[in-house]
Length: 67
Image (cartoon, rainbow, N blue to C red):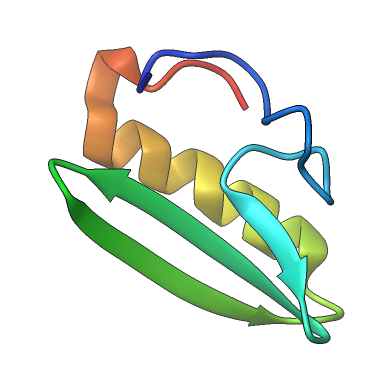
């Protein structure tokens, strides 16, 4: 599923790997059973989106898919 495109149909932000929970944005990426998780303040949505895309490319390389 690493090279899948787009967010899940039940995503509350519409951006892959970015969720909004309790006034914070969370970026979560899992590979080989290891969960990587980063938090962003509520006013940092754009930064969280860019960060998620960058980390997907870093972690999955050419199989990162599109966000």
